[in-house]
Image 1 (tube, rainbow, N blue to C red):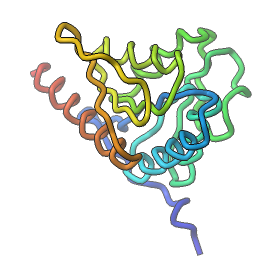
Image 2 (image 1 turned 90 degrees about the vertical axis):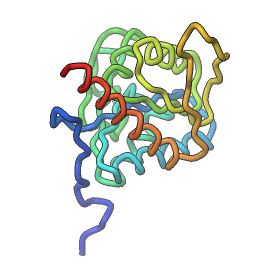
Image 3 (image 1 turned 45 degrees about the vertical axis):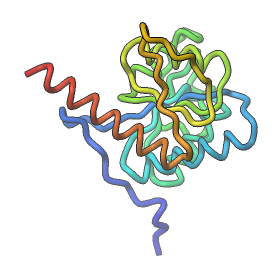
Length: 184
C-alpha cells in the first residue's frame, strides 16, 4: 500500500509552462512555533503543486523543505557557500553561490512570490529585495514595515500557513498575468 504523502503532486505551471516556484524566507534559528508554521507552509505548497526555494540551510529553511518533502514536493536551496553538503537534508536541488548573504537576492528572485516566516536581519533583507523588485511578499508572523505613500512596502499578512500559501499563489498568478499582458 503506498503512502499518499509520497505520491507525486501535480505541478502548478506559470503561463510559460515552467513550474510555479514560491520562495520561503525566514530565520536560521527561529522559535519552535515558527518551525511548525514553516513545515506546514511547505506541506501546503507541495499539496498545491508549487516548488519551494529557500536559503537551503537550517531553521525555517529546513522546516519548509521537510514539510514540502513530506507531501511529495520539490525543494531548491540557494546556498551561501561553495559546498553542497551544507544544505539541509530536505534539499533536492542545491545551488552553491559562494556569495554569502548576497545570495538572498537570488532566493527571492527565483520565486514568483515570497512567504516570510519569522526571521532576523537576513529575512528583512530578503523582504526588502523582493519588495524593491515588485515581488509580492506574504508575511506569517514576520517583520512589520511602516506604511509609506512613496514606496510599495506592502507585506500581505496571513493568519495561518494555509492562508499564506493561498495568498502567495494568488499574488504569483496575478503577477504572471500582469507581466503576460505587458508583453503583449
